[in-house]
Each structure stands twice: as structure tokens, then as C-alpha cells.
Image (tube, helix red, strand yellow):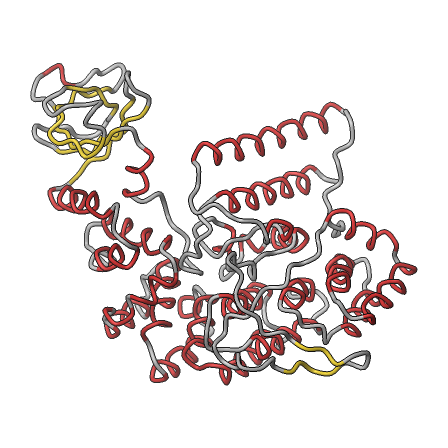
Length: 500
């Protein structure tokens, strides 16, 4: 196994674990927070103050870069610091008399201060943010909405990051207050970043209507990258407003189309997953029909097999056998997901098929049994067709039923198998222009190991626990590199099949 593969796999594990320990409330499903928000930063600091540079020649130490500042207002930590107190903070920029800064301090009693310069508007913004700590998500978003397109970059970025980490349910609740015309103009702004487009398309999905469909379909069919940036959110928005009938367009362009680039198809799959998890307009019985098309694309089939298992679509046993038997060295990674699908399937035909496949490739079956838990079926969240279980396609081996269930307390429909996660990295999806990598962050649709899906998740992240996880992961990588370079013990194999 190459060091690149070993390192990549450990990074995947780190992402899985940090997602687990982070906030598991589903945030804006396609948004990536650019940085920690001011509100988040203040919550983990021992003290936060507004300060100004002291008006004297010795205000800055030229050797250390420390600037002497006077505390003007204490926003947090009034037992540790007082108004009028002078403190030192490192800052190399302009410290003209009276310039205002936000100082964030840690490690009392010898406080270490980080420094952020503030304009008068930013200071007023920060004072308002401090009052939002105990407010509900919708109230906070109502405040940040007014700053999404603010001319001051720091404010607009902070507002965007707050939307990116907010629960999708809060974005939906804000729908009546969203200016539809302004939102459409933001989406069509050629200068809009991919992250911004994803957020604005998500917002359009909750406040738009069928009149927006021609614009969205034109962007889906466009050959201009700027029109199709944030494709995962674009597809999800289109399906939200069009309903089940919109699946035909997505199938045509991305799922059935064997010429569609991997990144485009992957973006469409992510949108389908969103609708099977948080969406409430399309029944899973229709969504899995679209995912079936991907099974005919041998190089991509492994991406959707875990979804079919979690959504209890057992109509594809024959197709799974076919994928397993026809797998060659170029796509033999599909065998482990196939085995997991059959292991999860409650039908006797699946057990019989598994016995047949074990004779063909016992190593793949052993690998799946050793390293992967059985996928946990996710429960139906769609309002459509919830009165009766929707019918799945009949297979030659059995008539399968896609169960319509109530939702788990912990959403697990976006859980990706370890093999799928490594596949995304190996395929270079992280560099693809439209790849929906938002799901790899704790702020977005959560990605956790299937074996953890049924556990009770914490409602908020413990920062020290997070530091521990990241440190442990990095230490493991360093130890592995040392062993490889020193010719020491072999690295424990990563539980996925090697791809050439």
C-alpha cells in the first residue's frame, strides 16, 4: 500500500470522527463555513473585549510586535479583565490613535490576546452579536440576513458563515422574510463565489416556486461553469421546486448520461441524498428509481449502493450479483459495497446470493464482514406518499418493498461507507469544480461511520475533544510515515480494495 493511500485513509478517518464529535444538527446542506464565526469564537474564549491602542510612543514593542491597548468595553470575562486595564496584544498593522480592536483572550491569569481591527460599523455589529447568544436559530438568522451582502467584507463573511452552520429547518422558517427578487439577482451574479451560490440556491429552494424552474433548468443545461457552479445545490433547488417530475431532467443530464463528468454525477447524487434526508417533497420510492440508473454505470455504482441499503430498497439483488460477478481489476472496489448490501437485505434471496459470491471472491466477503458494519436503514422523512408504503420495482428473485418509516432521532441517510469515502478521495473529487465536498465538514450534511449511526450524538462539539481527535490522527500519520521510511512493521491494511 502506498503512503499516499495510507495517509488519505487516515485523513478520511479523521474527518469521520471529527464529524461525529461535532455539532450533528443538520446545517445548511450544501454550504461550507469559510471560518469560525465571531459568535463561535467568543463562545470558546475566556475573555473578549473592545480595546484601543494607547496614545504614547512606547505603545508598540518593535521587537515582539506587541501593542499596548486599553480596554474600553468588556464583552465577556469581566472577572478576568476590567475597563481601563492596559493589556498587550501582538499586531503589526496600523495602530493610529483611537483605532478600535476586538481582543480575544485565553489562558488566564497571564492572558494571551488575539487581535482583530474593527471599523465603527463592525464594532456596532459585534455589540449586537453579543446579544444573540441566547436567541433561537431563526432569530439569529433574521439578524444575519441583513448582512449577507454587506459592503464590509468581514460582516458579510460572518453572516454567510452563520447561515452555513444554521440548521436547515431555521433557513426554511425564515422563508417568508427572504426577498425573492434580491435572492435571484445574487444567484445570477457572475461574481458570486461557489459557496455563496450554494447558500442562495438553498434559500431559493425554501422561498421560490415553479416560476423559477425555467431559470434553474437553463443553468442545469448550460455549458458555462459559472452558471453551473454549486451544482449540488442547483440540482437540489430544482428538485425542491419541481417535485418528482423534475427527476426526469436530472436523470437525463447526470444519472443516466454516461458522458456526464464524474463530478456532475456526484453532485446530482448528493442532491438526491439531501432529498431523501431533509427534503419533504419527493418520496424515496422515486429517488431510488433515479439512483438505479447509476448502477448501470459500473465505475460509479459503488457510490449509490449504500444509499439503496439504508433506504431499504431490496429490489436490486440480481443487479448486485451482476455487478459483483462482472467486476474486473478496474472496478473491483464495487464488490465490498455489494456484499454489504446483501448482508443488510432481510430477504432469503440475498443470503443465497451471498453464498454464491463468496465462492467467487471470498476475500471481498471476508473484508466486508471484518471491517464494515451492516448499513442502518434510514427512515422516511418525505411527506409525499407516507400513508402507505410505496412500491419498489419487482426483481426476478423477490418482490421488494421500500419501507416508509418515521425518522430516527439521529439522521443517518447521508452516512457514507468508508469505502465510499476513500473512493471520493481516490477519484480526485476534492479537486473537481462541482464536487459536493460540503458533506465532509462538520458544518454541513454530516458524514459518520455507519456503525455510529444508531448511537446518541452530542448536541455540541467539545473543543478539547476535537483537538484530541485531530492530534491523534496526525500522530498516527507521523508514526505510519516513520514506519514506512524506516522499513518497520507493515501498516495495517485500510479496509477498502486497492484501486489501480
